[in-house]
Image (cartoon, rainbow, N blue to C red):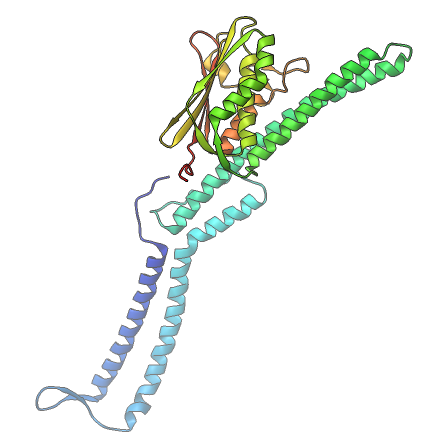
Length: 363
């Protein structure tokens, strides 16, 4: 929220308390001067200058009035300072109340502090933005946990069924049962590893190093070339050096997931995958394009959802675990990057990852 510039809280408090001090001094001087004039202690000489007449009764006469004025100033200063400080610190009270509300688990509350920009308004706006991000993160994590629980329950249920069948029919050949159990357990292990990778990437618990995306693209395409050849898919890799800062393992996983997704979701024969890298001032780009079916923008927008492939859920007999693009999105965000999915006019998909360029290129 953009606000017009205003006085800082420090300046407001300084002006307020300085004003009270000036007022207190003025009242004290006025009281002293009034008493001196009334009692005749101040007179003018022949030249017209003010002079004080001598006398021992000055102190005895002025002391009660001075004490009374000081007591009045003390009470007036305490009450006035209390009221002023309360008005000045009222925004902090709202921020504290919002913090207590958020600590109980309610992240939907917002401070929305009115007024001109100052330290308290800036703090309130930052706190509201933090609550908004936390709420979105919690909602996403809850939805993801629910989907993950459902997906993990499926292979476990299949394993239980296969074991029940083998127990009910002991003479039956167990080779087929073992093969299916192995496949189901492999999928469960892959899903668990993908969930752990997704969690680590989301927490940004990694050490940053200089990484060249063009080398990541070459390694990913060489690793997945046998899979592409089995599916009749041609892979083309080209581009410039694209240096960024991040985790080499996570960025390689990002590239592998993109290339694997482009190979698997392609035309059955004579398909194509093109991987390109480029660099511009401040930004490096990795783009993976593939041929395939005609896609709509609405359908493409669902591809980064966990366990989704378009509008259909991923099942146990499909390739992968349904977390490929979800992992790519999380890794890109963890590296302060963006992920863009665009349907190609001739069919298929174009996926672009933009990351900040490395700032440590100089020796």
